[in-house]
Length: 153
Image (cartoon, rainbow, N blue to C red; front, side, top):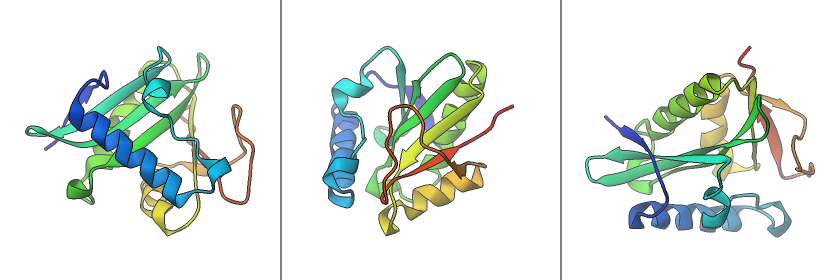
């Protein structure tokens, strides 16, 4: 149903969805708890971005940021509003997890917020086996954010 392709962030549809993602994160999060990467943050050598395509439309985006040889972070998961609840997140997360395994990642992790806006993503991550855990990387725990980890060993 969806074709998952690596994305170089140069396409208008991808950039528009990324802008929507950033606006949503800023609207749903306290100012000091927005950790979503912007275009420059995603366009670094340690980050791989994928877009889910449905015919000629971008249905969603997701990324994997390598933190070390065996640790990585899931970033920038966003489904276009026209494709919500159609399997976009699953298709992207399948690709992200498979890539993490192929790269030797033992534990992909992610940071996300709390509240109704984050519940659909949390449900998806938990279905894949992500569990709550400690902060990682440079994150500072707060009453708003939470950290999930998936053991691949």
